[in-house]
Amino acid sequence: MSRLVYIGPADKPAITNRGMGLRLDGLTIQRGAYPSPPAPAERDGSIGLLIEGYNGIPTGKICAPQMSFLQFDTAIYASAKPTENHADQNQFGYIWAQHC
Amino acid sequence: MQSVGNQFQFLAVGGQCDTVFDIRRGGDLVVDTLILNTRALVLKLRNVEHNTNSYEIRTLKADNNSVGWRLLEMQRPGSVRVHVGGHISRRATPAPDAIKLLGEPAHQDIDVDLWWLGKHWPAEQPVPLTR
Image (cartoon, rainbow over all chains, first blue to last red; front, side, top):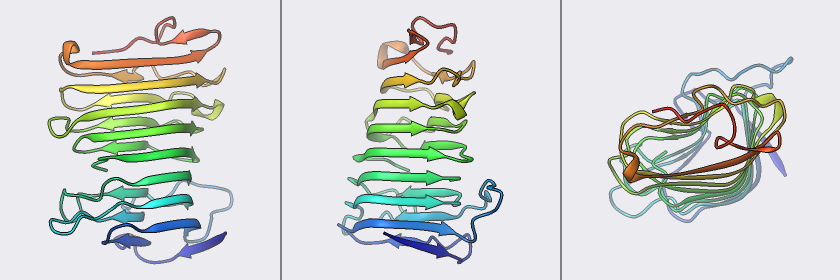
């Protein structure tokens, strides 16, 4: 398993998927340093995984057997950005969301 | 999320969390197992005028750190199907407004049956569905 620490700005998701049929597995994504003692994430709009909507080729169709999200405002955001279409039919296996 | 055709086999939510599923434009969602261990709203339904609105949580466990949790909040009236099973840990008392529905009951299929302190919630417990 891999743990990635994301230090980008709140308006840039850690992972953005604009395509179709992605497989994500065995991944822990943490936003910044984990606070000690534990504290709530900042409610600043940060996103761990953004699954973008699209008017043309269908997007989404993600298979994610195991993922963890730590300290994001939103762990997974599907569709509505930039359009309301697709970003659908996603299957998640074991998802851990901590302070999201 | 729009939540069309999304499935979670196992979802654990811990730490600080406001809303687990924030559904903006309807859709359908299946969760096989949801472990809730924080005081959060499980399903926020913003606009149910679009798409089918079917939400199924087959096994929900509201663990002891989720005292004051809420299950469902509709922000606009409409037809919905919400089926939730599972159990509530002994100390995980739901909020008084844990299930907030808006709209015509004839067009809603609400089936919530959670085992809590030896009884069925909300059918046999003092926290009612509110409209």
